[in-house]
Length: 243
Image (cartoon, rainbow, N blue to C red):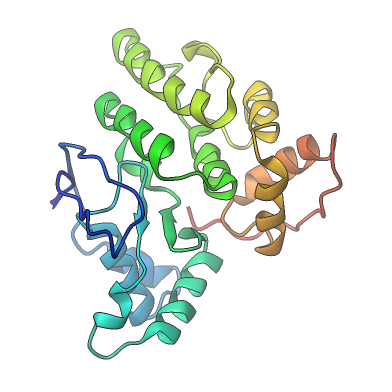
């Protein structure tokens, strides 16, 4: 298990203070085999493992990495850049500057834990101001299924998720019983809210530049249609989903 409570606050590595989560994150043994099945090579597996197991990775799966790559024996910044670019093309991470977001982190580790989900508010408010990364994170919240959970648990998760959603979009979440997390038929209200979030033009520029590789293929069409109401978006052909 990874101790997510301790964070590196060295000013040489980050420009903002990092909050403490007080949580452990379970890591599946041999999870590298899943990466290999996606076609990841040894370098990609190693880098993704470092990102996923870092004590500095936040509750939303964000991490600031600048100088650390150059300190590793057998690698350099050019090799790190190529490897991270490949991980992004596979839809496993999203990047803006020195910030990295593990795309599916919140879905894998927080959708069953209201307290850990709520802890994601701190990095959203204090660290991640990139509209692109915030949008990618928001696409994961589209997949939160609450409609058939125990009412108490659904209410607790809904309360936590509402804080994150409001921080990203400025909008309220739909009622818990309307959230089925179906990406084949995503919630129209949430699609509209996400497509009108602050900084959406900057987010879409980065999405288009990456051919939407960091967003699940099932969400391409509904999101691009919603965005097309106020700007022209190049329609990207769906890719095989890695999530």
